[in-house]
Image (cartoon, rainbow, N blue to C red; front, side, top):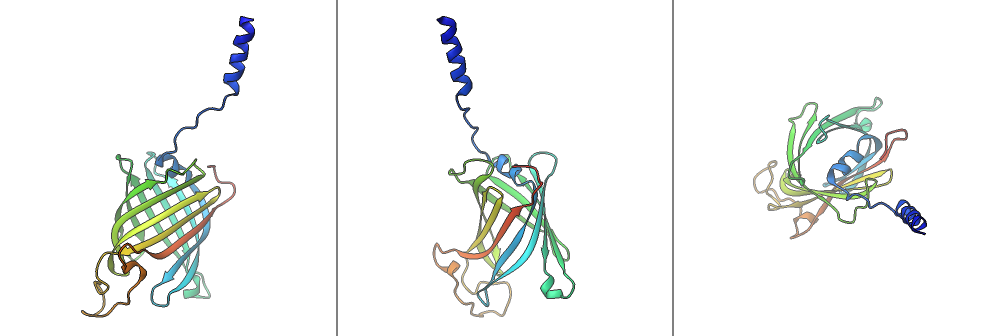
Length: 212
């Protein structure tokens, strides 16, 4: 009888589901490694219209587990027809030891490298490396004006979407271009607590890439 009970207990333990490890930002970053394709849609402030560009993204680990290299190729062909024009933006980012800060530098031919530091928050509702939401915020500039920038990235299986929103922190005519006193039309992001949608990236993992 004792042997039977022991055997039953072993079978119960063997069939009991293992507790999943809590999802971490490191796991989220690793889940982005590989190749993606899709489009970047951006909103033109003057016309208030949406424009889209095809894009492919290649993400690799820098070799130390905390540095990430992201290469994005945008097909800007319509402006240089009949030959397609590829605009490449390479971003090198590193996760800080505090677990909630990311530092990055973006490079684009013909432009000064862009340096930024953002605060990173993992949505508690995120369940695993294929289903998560991350929110990054930073103080920066948009439309040549000081602004708070928020990027919300969501992964749902093989789909990866990022939404960039801005909240202007200066007066509507606080710009670095134009003539002093030029009137700048109010935007949604000018309102207290208001956020203005700037662009969105819609990507799908290219088949054959390592999972997750």
